[in-house]
Image (cartoon, rainbow, N blue to C red; front, side, top):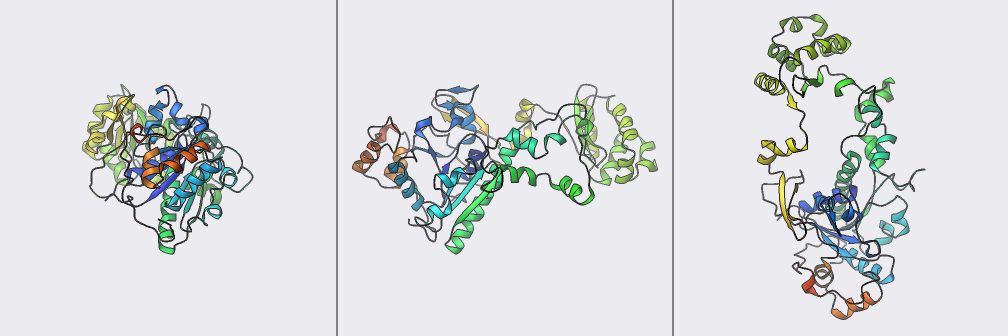
Amino acid sequence: MRPLEDIRIIAIEQYGAGPFGSLHLAELGAEVIKIEDPRHGGDVGRYVPPFARGEDSLFFETFNRNKRSLSLDLSTAAGREVFEDLVGTSDAVYSNLRGDVPDKIGIRYVDLAPLNPAIVCCSLTGFGMTGPRSEEPGYDYILQGLAGWMSLTGDPDGPPTKTGLSLVDYSGGFVAALSLMAGVHAARRDGIGGDCDVSLYDTALSLLTYPATWYLNEGYQPRRMPDSAHPSLVPFQVFRARNGWLVVGCAKEKFWQRLVRALDRPDLANNPRYATFVDRAENREELLAALREIFAERDVQEWLSTLAAAGVPSGPINDVADAIAEPHTHARGLIVETEHPVFGTVRSVRSPVQFGDSVVEHRRAPRRNEDFDVVLRGLLGYDEDRILRYAAAGAFGPDRSAAQPASETGRDADPGNRTSTPGSTR
């Protein structure tokens, strides 16, 4: 068995941060059931350009492999009944909504504990459920500015700069997944679930790490450094070679000694002004001026070969195509393929989470409401009359007057074996 095969998660998620967090749980085997609002066409990620066709997009495929999809209108009494039946047979309710919304729509532990005392309610919000910003929407760009990241990123003479990827969103997804698993562990041990109040803001602030500690204790003012340099380790930055750029890092004294030997510059090795971390930091400008002249004399690949042979940490500045083509990428099995009815063979980057040596068989992201039968008939055991009654009451959307035939789903209706958790009603 994969490590999380006995865990079921109801995911009221959309776009990037939330789906990114549950993606890793799904790839570890958890059954993640996406609840998609039929009034709004489901997850907004389905429509993100430029590679979107109808209700399918490569953006959505990126974040939703190995999940299931059910269209369910939680604003209707009938939709709420179906949701509550799912809560009774699940381990967690996971969401990424504005901080005040989980309380408004009744998906906090106090709302769901009567249905399942062991349920874990994990909410990833922009700013958390408390504090003066709790009702504000949170977006990665805004958080990077608010949490100080942009003041640390980019060239000193340029504008404040965001990271090249949405790292607040993705880090928040990781934190939410970790919090959810901690909650499920505690619930299985104690029989009592609870809330996980996770926020992008908390995540972004926590990632300030040692610069924040330096500021809080010594009044240190972080600043942007030329050539993406480390604030205290010299040299540890990018250097321009004759035909491009490379990264060189001396995070230990032994690497500095190896570097000057590789450069064939005994004058640098023997200069007391560069003898230690502290010395090199104090004389940063003159040392880096000398190193820039040296690195400009040869091509990137020549330097990388020389530095690798000398045992100096270094690497190229790859673009995305180069990174995908790296032999190590393929040796680690980081590219996965799934078959999609619109896009054909879809290649994407797998989750980095790993346990054991079993090979994961990846399933493409679900079409909207594709798992109607799997969830309602297979998992919850609804009969046709009950499904028709809920459909007529608007549980599955205003345009749904009858239940979807099993032949339309294209999925196995067997929801798989499940293991009960203390306090659940399975």
